[in-house]
Length: 305
Image (tube, rainbow, N blue to C red):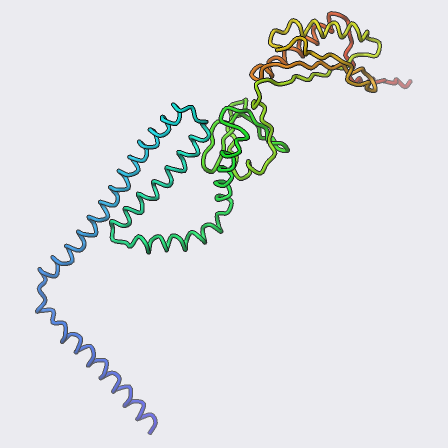
């Protein structure tokens, strides 16, 4: 009895589904559809969408081109005003990104998308992206701090203490600062790292102090050595103040007397002058017979018979 009821139920369900399908085809009579009107309507919609997409791409292309021209004019104007190059580079990068965002919003609005809804969507996505890109945002904040505090500018030679990073500041962008080393390599440092690091600016001041120490033997005549060092300093024309040259005994080491010489030179001549003084000291000491002590290793070979 139960099996018969189940069979009857399945038959009724099948009949009901068949009736639904027939009713659907009865409502939509394919023979009565005006296919020309149907195609015209949807073709018009498709062409409208394609037209909006093309115009949106043109807005982006033309907008980006105008932004490029505007940034170039702004950069030229700021350079004529003799504004720091780092400020110019950072400002142009920031303005370029902002203007491009505005152009993209205009293109999206032209396609019929509600800008308010789009902004709300970007805001929601921005929270998630912001959490994922904390390092990138800290680089932007670091770049702003560097522009405000100005610990260096483009063209300065800086050294990051505790690292091997040093070189001339070549460019400052919104996210990174680029250093050019003396062997023409480029070091890219995130602004967030740079703003939180201890750095030395070797070219911030117009002049630098050269401090050289050289060891002499305990048998050498200190007065004669001071005379030689004074003569070397007088012959070096790049030293700014001859009266400000200091020659002194720095310390009494285990195997040598450490002599010191200090003098001021222009920052741009610092390295060349220091090299020249070191070379001249070695040449004059050799000519005068003054020994510069150095570590020696005596090797004794014992022949066993």
